[in-house]
Length: 385
Image (tube, rainbow, N blue to C red; front, side, top):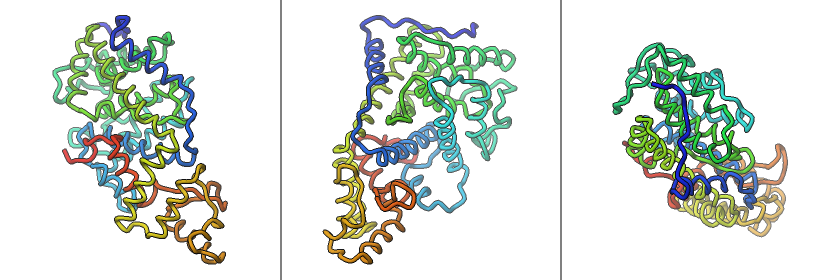
């Protein structure tokens, strides 16, 4: 069995070729989002949560989005094993964003560090989702649950792994780069280089590869590549299994599945660059949701609604006179109450210009609900399996 990884040529005019062309347009699209950075990066943090939980759920973690959000809001209880697994994925995504750009070379050390982060403080297999040798290539043969595929024997794993690193680091001409990213995901699962955590690590590599390819998550784009898989977990495993034959047609079918899902997801999430969309579809419904559940008062709702309706989504205490708060003391106390509830934050430390804060407080429930209502959250994340 060859360890070399190649890219089959799709037929010109095929659905796959058209998908690649459309994704190339999205990759190079100038992001002229109207949404202010102080709002965009809060939304990005929420999709970070969705990516984190989605990858864990594919592996059988039963934590629902609602449960995870409640744990984030409590921020006190010691995490159990399932929550620790989700937290580890979140830390691994942080590592990727801090250490990956278009010049990154993916090394064994890079992947080893990700594996250590993913398996930290987790029980090793077969009982848990940890590792007996975090960061090390497996020293034994493995079988993949619910799959007929047998990963390469550990005696030849080193050669497979080195060829995988060569493949993801070599310069592919532009028309093949997205195909290479899709193939890399399958081939990583195929060789199964670690004793556990390969699925989680493989999906995180999607994120890293997309950053390397220029999908600018640090400059105004949100991507959530695991959503391609957790929307229909059975289909994901089915397509991976077909590609295990390594036949050109099966590999191209996998690429079409992966890249079409990615294109649809990016197009959908790019709508969050519109200030009007975020205001009318996400933030205002979230505030109404919070008021209906008495998380915020009628007065707080009115002020926060005023804030999110402003073009820059910024306000000063002086603006509170229109809400019947006339003295400086009244305004100061009201702003202090919103600050204490973490529903507003200054855009600069110690500053007096504020924006809404909806990630680290009970407004998060309303924002998640608005995202669910508008198709940004798969039902898979909302229900116990």
